[in-house]
Image (cartoon, rainbow, N blue to C red):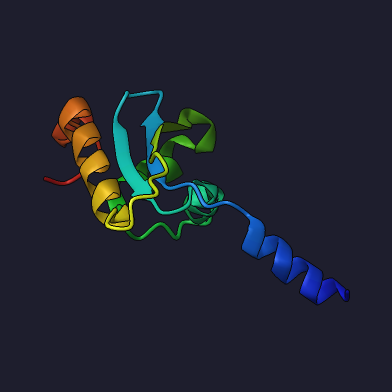
Length: 116
């Protein structure tokens, strides 16, 4: 098998893990809570913040630039559990899980970067 086909097959076999994450500013303890269909994209989010390109949250980007990447921690809060039910909706379940964490952590105003 040629290399391109090998890589395609490897990509198809890579498991996707949806979940909830937080980005925490260790200087002022503000947090951002977010969700992703694939937790492996957290490296991409970190790259966007490093290159001043994280447009979904201007305040987080501003403080990332101000304090530097070493002032932030990125943690996975919870992974979405696999469900074989044919009527299970990953997108809705992920939104509900994110809502649970937003309710629990209240990352708004002085406490965080999320908008109500």
